[in-house]
Length: 130
Image (tube, one colour):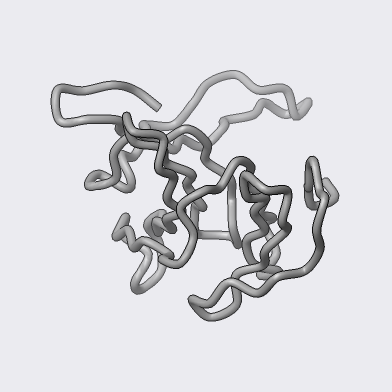
């Protein structure tokens, strides 16, 4: 991520590896989620999408998804997942398992087709394996 006069920009680059699988350089970075501001966290959510946690200067959070080129509909277009404004932590994985969040009150929520579903209470941290 980087800061620009227009706000936070999220960049994604590939890792170039040598024959021994050691990283040697990065590919040219792509800017994704250009209209999304105040990004705090970015996590892969599936193979071509990023889940983004934002927080404005007033402390209100937002959860967004942004496509990362290569497939139809994943050219960097961002959309906000509405319904929660008190998200503290975000987890997602490269499989299509969806996005998990923990709210300010310790409630674990799972996003399913644009709707947040409660899973558990009194949760401090969540992560997908890997």
